[in-house]
Image (cartoon, rainbow, N blue to C red):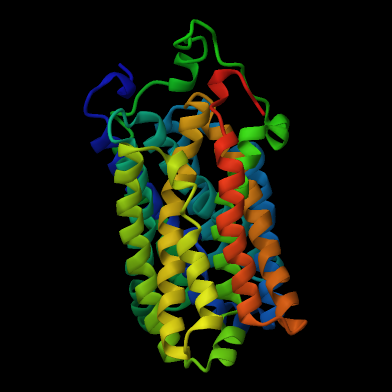
Length: 408
């Protein structure tokens, strides 16, 4: 019996989503970055060389999600997560055994694809597809998993690196994926049975019709999809750009590294709070409603750089970015279910994930160019604020569910 027919769908879907997001930490930037000094020393890489290697692996893995995201539509959740964990364990093992920088590349590609990409993707798909009631809260649990990983793994890795060499730590990560992650996630996927995509393929709509199937290449011209992208792609692009250039911003504002480090704690707290609120607001209203205002906290934060003093702007910016990040993490998961249903959720999120990776690679380039040209922080903040107010107000009213038969 499919989990979608059970009234208590949220607990198993939410538990799986949180755990999948937690285990995705091995492929996340914050985890891999802990080994940056070791990689540079071992393979004779410069900062730019390591950055190019990492960016290349990330970009290829992100583009791969364009096609591989639909695996969640064609395989049972248990089979899908088993395959992803095998890939993640293999990637960690390849990193541990790399003898040169070029041999490090396939390992980085695999852990970025399966960890940062597919593992979190499966968590979102599971929450969106199998949570029958309180879907927003189940989707919020994906964010909790990411936040928990950011809180737990860095100190554990630092402690391990104090006792063992970096290769042993990666080998241990590979073993943990197979010995802990695989049985645990396979067990959590147990109640989430069946293939809802196949079951719903011919399900009639309330009006008696059947929603037309979407094609991957047509998503890029689908009106509702593109309009949503104009909102949900902004937070990852903006936050990636601001964090990558935090040194340049700190110099202009007179912030110390210690102060910035403390502000990241506020960012994480705000992100968790917003994810918690977003899940409940989506259940009460809809993800579409949150699209109207979710960019406003980040816009206020960036605009504060040119309006407030150095210390107040530090806290306002990180708090605003954290709120928007938390809201967006849940909204960007729930909105696709509202608009397109669940039968092609894997494919749709895969296309979104690929576009997000590409766009976040371009964001830092744009901000860096503006800073090099001497643009003031106030002008940058003002541009973000205008966008945050005007674009959602213009595009959100025209976003209609695909099941209504409109793609414009």
